[in-house]
Image (cartoon, rainbow, N blue to C red; front, side, top):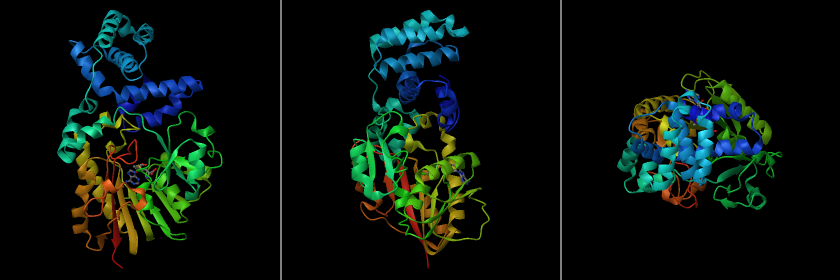
Length: 411
Ligand SMILES: C[S@@+](CC[C@H](N)C(=O)[O-])C[C@H]1O[C@@H](n2cnc3c(N)ncnc32)[C@H](O)[C@@H]1O
């Protein structure tokens, strides 16, 4: 329950709290706690809708939380109703408010079991986001929302891109363009083949595309402006670039350092605000994976749907414009800049481009070619930027939502 609280209280809450909260649990219990928290978050829309119908007035918060957990077990994890109800009632006995309302908890959960709601895709997203997606993507919005309930496969990026077939065989996966290796394996990654040797790292197939589009060559200089936890830094370093990785968060940079050490790669790490980093160097290739609403990552982080607020979008878009302006100053004449966001909201992606180009006549759009960087052809827009949607296939199973644009500085 604490994991769900952390996830819903703040951005990255689950990621930040996970280590501490699950540390005391044995492997299997840890796996179950994580799976239940994620299932509850994936099904939060339908669960809260069904609870709103069954409860005349809002119960104490702890009771709502218990009801969510009980309902998630039945609806998302197919736990038999008697088991879901009895574990929920056992937890209720430990809570002062819930103890007084065990009859209500029992009745609501039994009612949900009898009724077995069959939610539509739109029920899984908050209404305001669904309205936005319909306005931006029309009919595709339903297909997009249909992905929310699905548990995604695990995607791996490789230190040596020639090792795709061998890794796919070792993890019973398949090789996607890029290459990325996709596997449905679950469980403790640290015992998978190649983990110890640092042959791969976890990175969604869509998240691996932006760094490839910089086409860095061995010996070139590359700047990763918002680098942590470091997936794209690793790609740039693996391609042989001399990488400077910057992030505002010194805490998050620790993850970059750990990841570099495991994969046996090197980069210069700098804790600084990319908007005001006063360093005179200019680079062949600059990557700006800007902070964003992250709505495109709902497959792995369903909490983003509930922590993101309508007012966040405009504020984030303003920050992204500022960071884009700062990024331009770091690009060598003739050098490349890739801008990306893991957001489905157009103000953070498509909406940035025209204004950026009018502010920076020294930069021009450098269109992507079909399939470049492993991107699905369906993602290529007329202007040569990319819009990836979780519902796009191939690849089977989809990929995270991303917007990507590439610019070149006039020589
Ligand atoms: C989308 S994440 C980056 C993910 C990373 N590129 C990767 O592939 O693993 C955004 C990062 O931007 C950092 N950030 C946010 N605002 C920043 C700023 N003004 N300057 C530098 N880093 C910033 C955050 O700390 C966060 O780590």
